[in-house]
Image 1 (cartoon, rainbow, N blue to C red):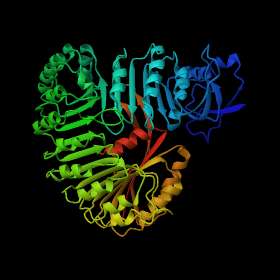
Image 2 (image 1 turned 60 degrees about the vertical axis):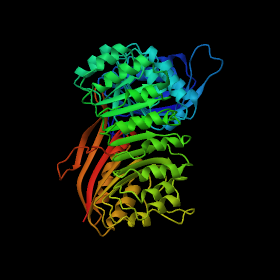
Image 3 (image 1 turned 90 degrees about the horizontal axis):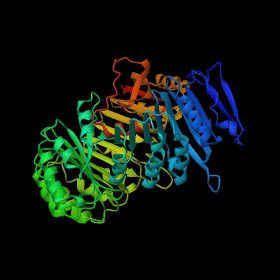
Image 4 (image 1 turned 30 degrees about the vertical axis):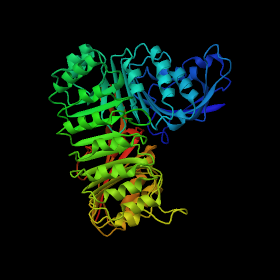
Amino acid sequence: MHVIIFSDSVDLVTSELPVVIVLNHAEPARCGDPPPVLPSIQYIDLHGVKCSSSWLRSLFSTLLTLDHEVQCIITYCYITSTVEGSDRESTELISTNIRTGFNNTFYAQLSLYSFMFGETLHVFGEALHGLNIKLLRINEEYAIANRSHFVAFLYKSLPSLSSLETLDVCVDDISPDLCEYLHSLHIKSVTLSQKGRSRGVIVNHVSQLSQVLISHTQMEAIIIDVNAHPDLLEALCGRNINSLCLYGSGEHLEVKNVSALCRSLSSLKQLDKLDVIVNNDSPGLWQALHGLNIKSLSLSGGETGLIVNHVLALAQLLASLIHLETLSIKVSEYNPCLWEAIHGLNIKCLSLCNLGQLDHISSLSQSLASLTNLETLCVKFSCAGVPRLLETGCGLNITCLSIEASGTCQQLWEALIGLNIQSLSMSGFLHMRKNIQEEHTISPSLSSLSQLQMLTLYVSDFYDIQLPQSLKYLNIYWRGEMDTFSLSNIVNTLSACTQRFEIKLECSVKFYDSIEGYKIKMETLKNVKMTRFLIYTWKPSIGNGSDWFVQKVVVGVDGNHDDDIGDDKLYKQFIDDVADLHRISVRFRIN
């Protein structure tokens, strides 16, 4: 048998009225009945439990009847399939974070383990079948290796949710196929967001557009198909729209649609930001975007990145965007001619994603060298080959550099040495410290950046780091849950620094009773002055997505309770990743 501990208190440790429910893993028929639940329950932890998807559905159904939020942590649980007519019993391992019971909302943060096996999402989908959910919010914790599993999960689960009015999906990466599927759903509102970036509402007919534009909770962007019906394109004309996302297949864009799309886009005088997510390009697609007054353009495609078959047409488009300041491209390494399209642009910020091995570094280097107004360079890559790109960057006048990498390598640290940058952001690194295999650490690289004023790190390790004397601001976003040992390593290292600078530390913690230990650790250190220590809790909301509320002010000397996210993409990524029970936000300075 297995045991689930229910508590009628937020603090599980100090609860005086714990309730223990024993489940028979043999799954008798009566287990399908709603399990007993205290009306005031707020937290459930299922660890190593084996149960059927029908029992899990009964639990969710009961929680949805409550008038308050309940968090249900499911860790390493074996869920058996109960679909009639199946040849064999299917048992899958699931780990996920559920919140439910708040205005019939259901939030699921799907972890890495939810995607290790394709059938896992299928069994989890059975647990959602027929639930009385008005708002369903799904947040991926990690990228999905096979997008088809996720789409199949949505396809099989959503039709049974007859009360569903709003679907909110947050993913690591947006593909045209996912947009197309969500576009086909008959739901009042379907919102889609990419972690660390803006949210958008998918609009597939005129009535939806009108509702979005008059709504007090208007999304940051409107998402439509490049092959949208002419009536919808006509309805877009002259609207006060700041951000727009186009998705679909560019190669199927008909001539009449090119004209309609061009006329519609050119009428959007307030349009500032445009995202284009297409499987294939066409001269007509690039022609439809010609001459827009946008300041920001993002181009991406499927999992392999953007493959441009019409480089000349794209080059002509980019040259026509005279007000363009920011260009983001999720590229395919198999198309070296793409770099010719960015040659000589007057952009200030360039973001390059999915660089792969950079087999054609010389072509990219020449294009980068021609960007004389470039101030910010953002690159996402696997380590091999990219140090050569950073060496090219030494000849540029960039002041801000952002690096997202999978893994670490000595060549990368060496390539950072001596760069004349004022701001550096780094994420995706497995370790920031010296290990047996590596003789070189990041410390000499950082200490050599004599102009560096702001350093932002999104890491899960923090050792042996030496900061330059010029540093004024350090932002640390901790990947995963932080313990007091990790906090000690961070603060002890920083308190030994001789210069004065300010630190923003953000991390998530699982249990509330451990938070006091974090504060005590910091108060015992010399040369450390805390100016803020806030505890945030997350709650789903019908209109606003991830809402963080200040649950407790431990230290609030400066009186500032804002998140201060701004344009910090790593902070936005962190906020999406740690939708957990508690988040602590600390501000302190080294005197």
